[in-house]
Image (tube, rainbow, N blue to C red):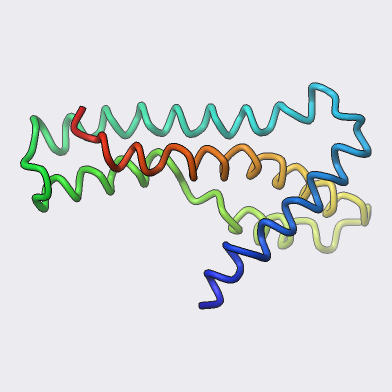
Length: 136
């Protein structure tokens, strides 16, 4: 229940606030859009690597709805969309909480928010398609 609250409400609110603040401070330059593009690149690379791994681990086509089919779909989905949710915020907080420059934690959270803006939108758009068309 708490996980759903964080993922469905609190994290999007934090992303929105951090992204709005970062864009306002930077003037919306090209560097602002570099991190969402990096997220899309990470997803594309994960998909390619997942497809290659699936060729070796689950060779050939499999019966739709079978256990092998479900494992293949899960494997591809997990390799395409790595754990880019709230986990980076935990690491950044642990790394920069005691930093002498108090602004660095906020800046790091803003950069993660920009990355997650690209990652989250790609996740919600493409994850169902990855699960549906894994045998293609």
